[in-house]
Amino acid sequence: MTATYARNPGYSGKPFAGPRPVELVLVATDEAVNIFGLAARFTARAWLPQVERAAEEVARELVSRAVETTGIPGTRLPWTAFQEGEIPLIEARLRLEYPSLFVEVWDGDRTSPYPLPGAELDEHMAAVQARVRRWDWYPRGRGKVIWGELGIPPQHHTGKLPRRTAGRFSYPAPGGQGHPLPDVETLRQVRDGLARLDSDRAQGAAR
Image (cartoon, rainbow, N blue to C red; front, side, top):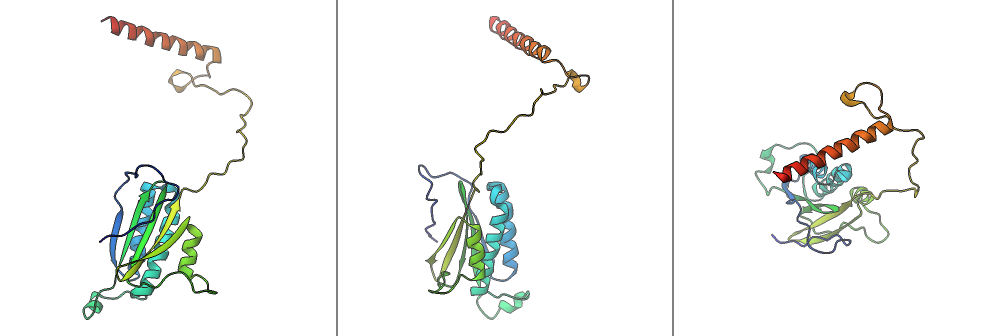
């Protein structure tokens, strides 16, 4: 099974030798939503914890949409319900291309998730779009893959250096008890310790 996956446009150079993708084949029922949601949460926690919550939400929305499109949504069904026909399956995948985490879901419908002119995104794709850096889809086999890219959120800086509180820090005395040592005494102990370290090194080299 061969597929072309989107690459991070900000990436250049050698491919990132990251962990192996997490791939699941699930029966397209409501249980699949919880299964892939939990898989996304714990995988993101290990790979890219900054997007753990968003990864779980995107995974749930994409699988929910796939179940509604090609699966059997609604109440939990017994396995005997699938004996007379083909079992509807979906494929879900998590892939790390640092600094991005890709969430990908395949279903058996080739209809584009983009809305018709003048229409709006369905609720699942609207929720995905609100959480990802970018998303898209491509046909594969008799169905399609919808993918979303999650990246590390930008850090907002004020441009100002943090202000240090007036006063000096307290250094604990040896053993963690007693009064703080004066700064001069602390520096003297550091000096003596470095001198002993140099002396020990010199004696070791002489041997």
